[in-house]
Length: 417
Image 1 (cartoon, rainbow, N blue to C red):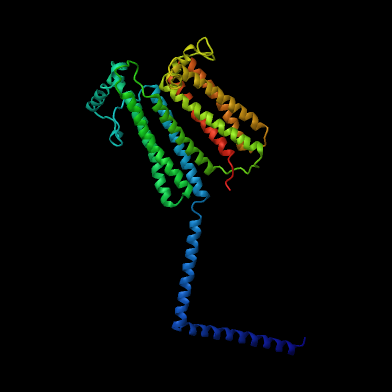
Image 2: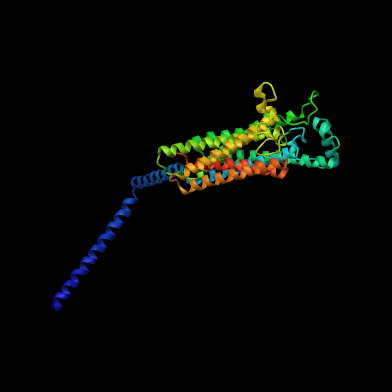
């Protein structure tokens, strides 16, 4: 290329660059001038405001659709597991209170006033004086000292305060989570039912205690609460625990995608029946405790020298023996315990022949191991004449066994459609 041609090309490029630059500046000035028009400026402002409002509404709708979500479900699941743990504490503490014969030491019931125990000696003597007016002191503890009374009083006071703690653990977070919008419609019904059940449980506890404070001139037996009311009180606590634990596990544990085969449906029904049997066995323990039936026959596997004792049907009508005859109550508890062990063993063996997720296999294996441990605890408690520590451990074991049964059911549950 010659020098003249190069100069010509350079001049053309320079002219083109200058033309484009000047055109852009003119367009910019024109736009600025036109934007000074009031009508155009007003239109642009309205357009921007509507766009911002639309984006804000869309983001609010998206936020609303995210509550409840996986994160809130984890929070609710952990809360319900914590509540179920507190219920276990109440059950265990109630059992210890029963075993130490402390449950009738507080003869009044006040929701707020009794939260503060006696402080001065005068207050303790006044509380002790009220206790002395009731059958337990007159018949069984007439030589009790003030110091001994303080022990049983604090046992019952601790149990009642724990019950109030359980109530607050359910009610206060429910109010908070409700306001935050964490609950679905179905969860709202569930938590309202749980809170109502906590309130009912407190009333039932006092109704149970009242049965042991009543004067019975025709009887000189050791004063005790009604075994019917005791069983209702324990049964309602176990129902509250089962509902809380089951709901919590459902929120926390993702459901397995299991093929709905005939064998799986059989296993699921088997697990439900076994769980019901475990619950019934634990409930029958309340009748054993209420009648002190664990002290009637302290031998195993026979009851005394016989497989079936002579006084099994000593009461009339025969149906009365199931709930009021200590021999029959202990016999029934043994039969239910052995039946539960057999059912759990069968469930374990049946599950071994199936392809199940790892978590489900672990749950069923732990259930089987706990069942054998619980039976060993029960037999030891019986043979050693019901020592307090061992009896409390046995009662705690029944709750642990029930917990594992609920876990198994949670692992085998259907995926909601």
